[in-house]
Length: 82
Image (cartoon, rainbow, N blue to C red; front, side, top):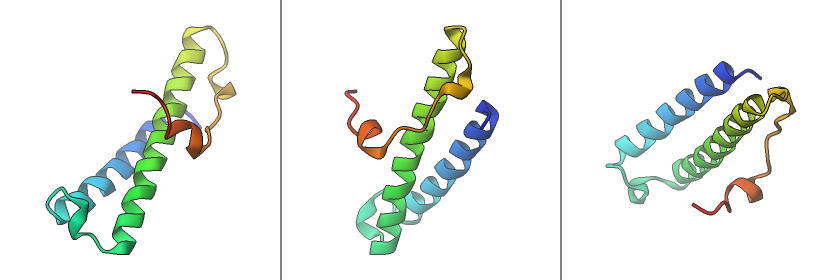
């Protein structure tokens, strides 16, 4: 997957996330169970895609092949220190 593909996918998922949140006043309280689950999955997938993009950019800056980057497990990307 190329950086542009990742960026495009991030944009699509972020737009879906925005639509879900806007439909319910930027809060998950008004979402039904299916919508909350979808929003949770969107957020996790977005975290994974952003992580993959950062890995690819770091590898490229280090003079390495960005295709060495791999999608990391949810457990890894969801527990990063901010």
